[in-house]
Image 1 (cartoon, rainbow, N blue to C red):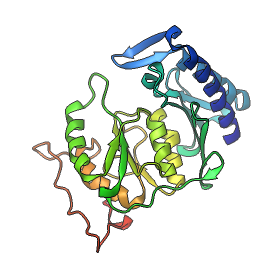
Image 2 (image 1 turned 90 degrees about the vertical axis):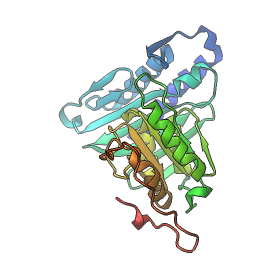
Image 3 (image 1 turned 30 degrees about the vertical axis):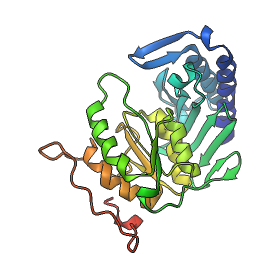
Length: 291
């Protein structure tokens, strides 16, 4: 099944690369303000679905553009979660940070993942219990143990109704505690980069399942943790996601948990005080995290 997903991702990537040669001729629409969709999104998604259902016609589909359709018969337990072009805004501006994201969920558990960056021909893959890979080389999350040494990635709110002020406070809390924060513009690729150790952690609000499903399995199979801002593993449909290696994950929870929609807020709607930062003599341990 992973091989079929790879075939589907590469087919979509070929369409995306061809379209990138003539962006001026691209038809672009908007699902809402700042939330763009192109004919390439639709064509890439159709190519992915055709490939997957050609091999597994009874499997279910959960795709960004065409929605959700359940599996049937023997395929009822299988659902492919698809983002045909994660980073559409980057793509239509010619900014080369976007990817194809495909995950397979079996009985509610993520089992297979592919994140394909067509501009670099980088293929990230993972199978449950078998590790994560970049271009057939095993990858692991970074080994840093102190948040102050870390490079994080994030995503800015951009849709009407997004929690803009909440994000600004959260960003303001996080920024002085780390070595740097980047906003590449593709959540699936951000998670793949955490898995590969290119960045140390990731956090973002307002995400959909197709944004994070494949990347989440990459992270966990690379030795990291993924969850909502309280640190709990319920993230796929909570519209908030955080990922890092276990030690950094626990420290990120200390900063972000007060901004989570998954935990009761204090009466004054401010985040609870952060736990004291660990000293060099007593580094944070994975077991210290509140989950």
